[in-house]
Length: 230
Length: 398
Image 1: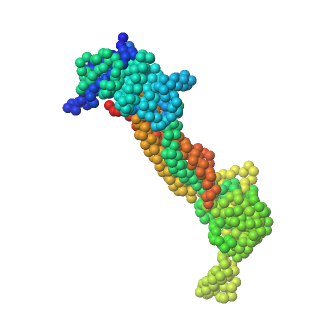
Image 2 (image 1 turned 135 degrees about the vertical axis):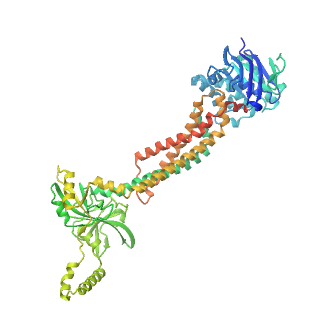
Image 3 (image 1 turned 90 degrees about the vertical axis):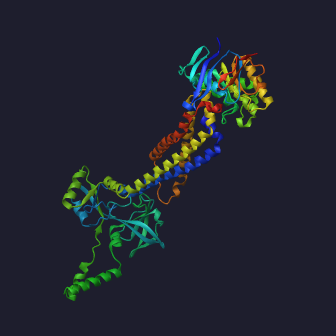
């Protein structure tokens, strides 16, 4: 069974002559540990699709099945979506979006406190992740004192904190130079392989998705042709 | 992990500036509390310190502190004869302004029967009580005189024999205790020039009525103004005497007004102090509102500055309460810190005020509770902003 099944997702903003169909019957599947790229020009609906998958934005119609559970069907959801997000989904953003008043260590710790992880266990997990991301030497730095690449690595560590089954990444390399961007993508690939965490990433840049398993192309809210499987 | 503390730590400059500013406002609020309480304390201290069982004053007057009350001294004997009265003493209270050591000073004269009468000073800080019928005085330390010093008042010079600090006049000015006779003379006797002028007016008036010069000379001494005037009679009841019954008897048979010490205190509070109390309450309310508005604006600005972080927190699954608590804690931390600064400041400068600032723990606690409620209210704008922030904002909009 696929980790994520999205069937016929439609998202309409506004109504009447102001209606904008941001997603129009989008269907896709993501397996556990799979690397999926969503590509397409600006305004094609990539970010909207990420928001709909994580139910940050409620689709207008369609079905979302995640981890064997129908989490959304035609205007209705049956679960605590915030709990779903904090326990099973990790997010990586275009910019690191670290909480500026927390140190790198505390930023990674934050999602663990949300699920009530015991302090000792949480502290160990944070150090494990920071070491994994090769940023442990800067654990007690505030984000403003870290470089863009370092911030993004902390952001990935934060996304991984609760051992999510799915990471949703919205153009995670957009604010980095090519070399740093490639490093970040390499990290995401490593995570997918080593932790069997599925990664769905939105990107414009084809150079960043070398080695990805599936590539979906979106245009005007629709998937173009069949997905590319490598 | 305390998000509020971490955030304020990052913005400690602005936090400290806000806390200092609002702290100064709280200082003013607490000072206003102290001014009001100080006025009530000073306004009623003399009444409670004198503390007889009953105050007898001119009929339909609230005096002697609330309004002028004049009684013939002889009425003290009538009151003393009322069943249930153990002692009745004449009492004079009169605010004056006179030159003391070349400086014009306001103070109040108290005249009492120095040989066992009620109404004299209870505790002296230096010297002794008045032991002679004339020309001795006990003064409040605030008057700035020393024991043994000679002070000219009216037609005579008085020797300071004792100092007190137990009570001040109802307007906060120092008290001067004199014997009843001295006080009466000082307050009611006119100077020689005025006496001569009055005699001349009376002489002409009598002559115009056809009274012979010899008769005029015989009559004139009897027309001199009476100085045996008092303002109140202080009453000590016999043990077991019914206060109400005695008061009713004095009212009905002597046609005078009677108040207990508590009633006299209430008269002052309801009369002279009531409007000031309302004025200060209004001022305090305004200052508290200003404090709440300042804190709420600062909190709102703090919230708006981290709106993206709030969106991130919500996006990664933080419940609303986690974020709302951060805003609330920031607001309360600001309120509590400001209040503590205000409290510390007022306690360190309280003695510098020229009049008594009385800080009561109950008032301070009440103000603190009102400030806390204000702190919660101040966070409302920020909390509202938190609740309406879409998590999708973290991804660059929807």
